[in-house]
Every structure is written in C-alpha cells, then in structure tokens.
Amino acid sequence: EKAGFDHFMLKEIYDQPTAYRDTMGSRISGENDQVVLNEIKMTDEEIKSIDRVHIVACGTAYHAGLVGKNVIEKLARIPVETDVASEYRYRSPIITKNTLVIVVSQSGETADTLAALREAKRQGARVIAITNVVGSSVSREADDVITTWAGPEIAVASTKAYTSQLIAFYLFGLYLAQKLDTVEADEVKKVIAALQELPQQVESILEQAEQIKTVAEKISLHNNLFFIGRGLDFSVVLEGSLKLKEISYIHSEAYAAGELKHGTLALIEEGIPVIALATQEDVFEKTVSNIEEVVARGAYVLGVNQEGNEELAKVVNESFTIPRTLDVLSPALSVIPLQLLSYFASLARGNDVDKPRNLAKSVTVE
Ligand code: M6R
Figure 1: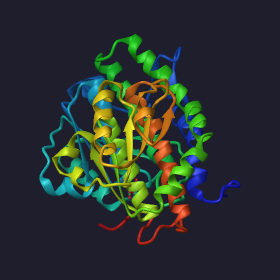
Figure 2: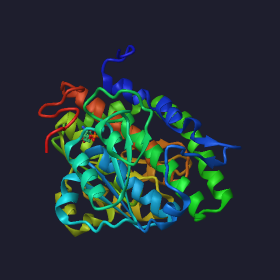
Figure 3: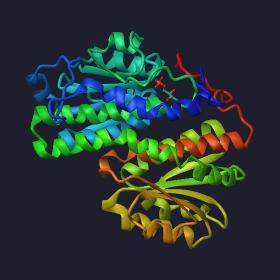
Figure 4: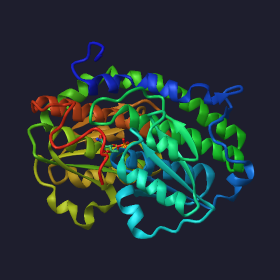
C-alpha cells in the first residue's frame, strides 16, 4: 500500500502532483479559462447576497483556511474570517442568512468542525464543506460539498489533504470572482494557467528532496526553532511549524516576520535554526531585512524563495528555491519543502513518522 515508500507520509507527499491534477480535474473547462463547480447549488442571486464568509476548521485544515481567507478576499472581495472550530462556537460569531460558512475537514468527521457546521446551519447560514471523504458526516450535513480528490490519507500528519484544500480554495475563489465579476477575464485566465503548472512544479521540488534532507538532519539535533514569513508565507509557516512539532517533537514557533522585534527576537541566539519563507514578491525586501535581524544574532537560517532571485541566498546559511508562480499560489509550492523537512527530521530522530505519539488521525471527540 505504501507503493514502495518507507512511510505513508512520504508516499502521500509524492502523491501531491496527482492530487492537484485530480482536484482540478474537470472543474476547469472551456479554453482553460473557466472554473465550473457543478457541485455548488447556490443561485447567482444567492452568491451575490453573500456579505461575509466564515472559514472554520481544525489543525492543518485551519491553516488551509488561512490561505483560503487571503484567496477569497483577494479574488472575490468579500470579507472573510477564519476560525478554529473549537473556538468558533463559543465566541458567538455573527452569522446571518447572508453568511457563507465554509468548513474544511479532510476526514469530514472532526467533532468540533461538525458542531460548528451544525451551529452555523442552525443560525441560518449556507454551509459549504471542503472534504476528502465522500459520504462523511460533514459532507452529508453541508448544503454543498467541494470534494478534494487527494485519495485516502493514512499518515496522521496531513500533507496531500492540505494542498488539495488549497486547490479547492483557489477554484472556489475563481468561481466566486467569475460570478461576482471581481477579476478581469484575462486575469482569471492567467491564474488558471498558473494553477495548471503547479503539479509539474511540485514534481520538480520533490526532485530536490535530498537538499532538504541535509538541512533536516542538522535541525533534528535542536529542541527549539523558529519559522518566519509575511503574508501568505506566514500562513504556510504556521503549517510547517505544526507539521514539525507533530512528528519530530521539536518545539517550534511560527511568527509573522515583522513581529519578531516585538518580543521573540529576545530568544534568537547563536546557532538556533530559523526557517524563513520569502516567496511573496511584494514584501520580499521587508522579509529579507527581518531575516537579517536573526542572522545578525547568529541564527542558522534556511531561506526559501522563488527562483530567479539570488538576493536571499546571499544572506542565509542554506537556501532553497521553489519554481516561479503567482504570489497567491505560492503556498501550494512552498509547503512542500516544509513537509519534507518535518519528515526527514522525524526520521533522523527515529520517531514513528506515520503514527506520532498522543495523536489520532481523526479527532471525533470534543
Ligand atoms: O480530518 P480533519 O481535516 O478535520 O482534521 C483536522 C486536524 O485534526 C488535522 O488536520 C491535524 O491537525 C493533522 N494531524 C495535522 O497534520
């Protein structure tokens, strides 16, 4: 079942190009210029009446929801809030019949997510589920379902489910943009073209896995480290940090790079590893200056940015580049080296990669 891989997690990391292709599948039509989501049964009028979106999920799915917020706000210009499901219900969120609630769950069985869905429906919201399991509780109870076609995910650490959730958000964001006319047709076409390049770009990242393995072996000797990034990179480092904690048991914190000097910088000392994402062109210079702040204090930095920009490599100890893409799509590439980093760090520490201690694949109790 592991198709020749040592662990399910590694197999699932390598499944990602296929998962991207399958999740996009027939949802892109015409001359590659249109997103068609037949599974969304909302009328155009209902779509136009949406005045806020709440994205609710747990763990890795929540991190996908953070990217989803950015994507929907950017493409559809509707205000979005993303919440962890265990908090959402208890903070009396403002839900009206014009609220669209999107629950995200690989398994479709997470207790808190399901409870949030029920509460949202009870208050009259329309609920869309993004899930990987056809027929799951969440898929049965939601009004509409966008299935991620990642195939079964066995490893406790979620990888291909997360990236397929990102693809689902890109498709849904474009779908809304078409309905609401918030993005020019040419621009939609550009995003769709870039989306379709992603699977092959992931393949090219996977070919460089050895480079990440070397860094992972070094960081596996540490008990504390930091992840930093700005904008979408911040959302991705939150996921990278969770992944690393979950399977390598190394304590890490993900920080918005610009927040460092408001406290965390005090913890940066000689030799501490810092994983820095700098894939967002519009904040690139600012991110580099944040990276320089930790370099100046002796941190050992792995920098990740888009290829074709040599500036970061000059500043950091180790550098890794992802293929060029639109900034908004970069999470679907930049998370891959972070998944590999966690995998190889866990392996180097001799942990049970697929079944980390204290954790279950599906959390069906509150
Ligand atoms: O099945 P779900 O997507 O609802 O699961 C949510 C979280 O429990 C899950 O993403 C968890 O955080 C993963 N183990 C992370 O790798």
